[in-house]
Length: 528
Image (tube, rainbow, N blue to C red; front, side, top):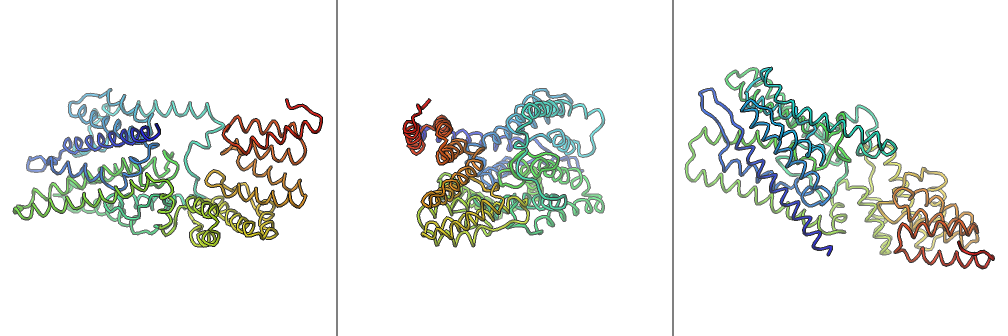
């Protein structure tokens, strides 16, 4: 049944996540740093385990593991990390790894997380070489480059084949100008950086572009760290190898891994900020941090109690991560609680707010719906203009629906005229909640009681246009109701039958179809 399917799907996600953590452990054990005295710095098994556990239990991983739809991210990560390990193995032997290219191509077909794989492989090879690569070593990057080019060619052919729908494949809305795009990109780099180490501001749902946390501190910290590595490596020659050829390439790998996420050149998701998109970039920051901790651990003589204190601190961090991740996992696994939990954010996700308001109005909690609309449905400066316009139209819909529900039909009709005759009503989102449908039905029923069938039919026509793409069965039903009010019974019959073809489990449409057939017989016509 459905329960077994869901349990199996979540179990698969968990297994892929565990595999990813194990591959990260292997990567941590594989990398090494040769000191100036000839000794080699490698992560101990305990440090590599802490690295993998820190990454795996981090609350930012919850979305990827909890969402069945994010299995593509898990598959892409595991296959891509396997390709990276095979590349490093081949690099040490001076051989090209075509098996790595095959795994990379499979990873890209899952999700193009690793589209910057050649640059990431180059940076890890730089760490392995501890300096610029000899020209002859660049040929080892060829299989990865060819795999990425093959994927891009395949994607290009696919986009040309479905050119009519290509606008829906590129992710979320674009920012209104270049400066906003640049500033938001910097902001998101800072957020991804700081939240890798300190999981603050995580909510089950959050506003895209995260304007509620739009403060420059995280970005300034990242830029300061980058500048510090550059300057310190230039001034401190003894530390130049460690800073410029280990830590700086790791930080550069973090920058590069985020390129397809933040929307530079192309975009792999439907927005440029979401905690789940840190799944890959975070590993490069954590690898660098793990090597720094390993070096500090080996540089000092630790007493027994100090070692126990370190182990206790590490265990406490992992326990806190597990507790927070478990909390969010339980929220994601419970339907309505996700929406309610998102409202605690200082600037909650507007679509979650709309859904919650719709639920309150269905429960006849009208005063609370008005309060939530006024306090939580906020405008966002980072959003494109049409998204803020859609929020303004929705506020009018809420006010009109509340007036209709309270029996103040004339006031409700004033809002209806304002929404559908004076505002850009096309920006209403019909797929997120049921409130626009209810608003249209209440306004149309009021017009029918006044004998103004043409006005009611026009409202149904506008509702049909709104739901044409997201809910074609509802759109066909609206077209049928408009035709029925205009006494075009054959056309109404056609639309109601089409609606039932799309959704056969709608008793309301069956009732309207029966009424239409009776009207046809009364007019001396035979339903075809």
